[in-house]
Amino acid sequence: MSAIFATPTKTDTKNEWGIEGLAKAIKASRYPIVAIGGINPSNLDDVVSTGVHGIALVSAICHADSPRDAAASLKAQIGKA
Image 1: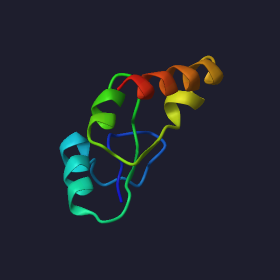
Image 2: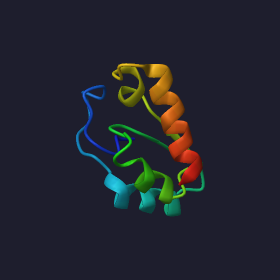
Image 3: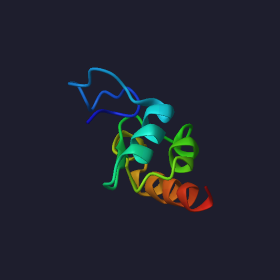
Image 4: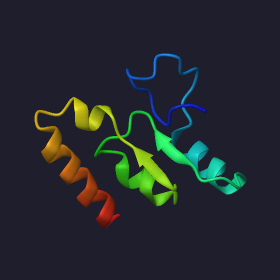
């Protein structure tokens, strides 16, 4: 288990998977995969495009000026992707 991108909320990450690593893991695993780590509006479409089963967003919501607005915006972005 590792983060998709570097993030301050995952201090024990040894390396990041990136989009390519996430896509490979999804193809190789028989289990559902949830992406977490450094996911934000600028890379969310790429994460969604991998076909990942779920996305966990922490900093993109908790560090926003308005977490409620950020969550709504991210949800809408996921719906469009």
